[in-house]
Length: 294
Length: 253
Image (tube, rainbow over all chains, first blue to last red; front, side, top):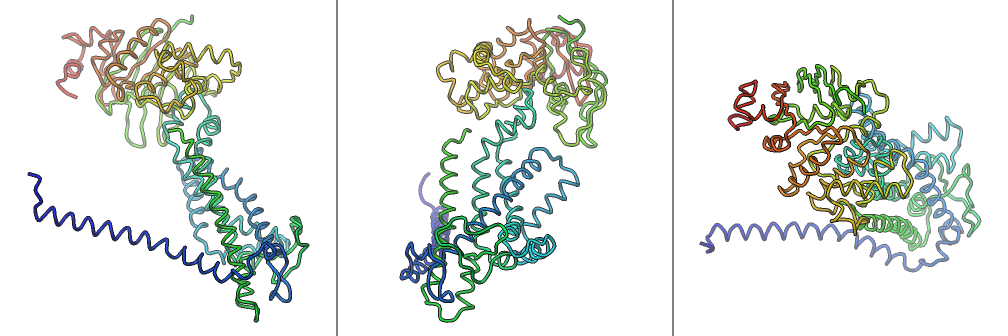
């Protein structure tokens, strides 16, 4: 009854092949990341030091460190998230918890979706037109942050909506049934159970904001600017700034004679910032999930 | 004690888009009686209950005409839906433990209604859990999550939560659908205890459950009220409608 027939053997073989193939592809995915990180560190090794992070570029970018662009990127990312997060999260709460399915919300949802698909260079042009020129902010930290905020906003809305939608509808209905208002339900049941997903979505936008080159190049970042080393408040809102992504572009393509390790060091700093933040997102997620309540 | 019927439903029509689910229901529920609503699937039992506590407002496309009066007030004229829902408790078919502690599950409604006093909350939580016959099982772990209880316990927790806001009318929508027979019997006993103090409306698929609980029974079919009468009459050999006889005896439906 349980003896192998040619059919079962054939099934076992194809099962084995399928599984091996899938495993292989999965492993293949990890490979590029390891190669990139390994290669970058290898090339950047000569310049990597705390000093490299904390000093301005010198001698026409050919020496010194990346303090000014590093701080610029931190500013741009933080300010853009401070602007985009409340707007995005609150809008997503409205869309997911209050809005009825009518033509208006469908248009808004469609707009959010499409905005998320707009290439960053288009956002850059929009930022240039709207903030730098029309609103007369000039090329500044604020204009660039606003541009990045608009770029990250639709993704924050989408990820927040997803996190909210993951809370079972039955919880809301149970709350409404005992006379809780929509807001009480959101405040006491929906948000506490979706906050980890919301935060993860927001934090993941850090890497996008940090990595984009075009938007900041058009709206706030400059070729070179020296700032006071070690001063965390060295940039003002209306100052121009440097940014890691653009700095990397400049020194690797625009300036001749830069020692080879410097752009790689910059790349490591950029990647390090992003990975650090992603790691933070993972920690947040794991910690919150361990308190998952259903 | 106020006089007059607890709930009056007058020519209630509900449609979802073009699909008419309730086709003109007129029904009175007396104070402190048990009214069972029986009927095959899709007969409109749930919709009828949702129209009473106005959770039907949350269903997109639902159009309601006619009147539902609770304690003489037309619910559709009310501004404060929260107050209505505290007066009309609702137990849904599937048990829902909120992702909060057992204590907070039961204290949720009073808190949302503005009660902050710790002592009063504790007193209320204990009373409601006792009424729902859950107290003895959970009294030592009120801090653990309501969602970790078994299905039957969660349904009793749901009932405790519903009792926590002192409803005048208690609606139960097929509460036994996801619980074991023992829990079903326990909850039926709870209802027998409560019946002298509140009006109970029970939508059920189990005709024998309606029979056990007595009171009156309404037979709903295809969105129409076929008949409503004392439960003995509905289950006798001669209810007013032949259809009722056939349904309760399992000949159709």
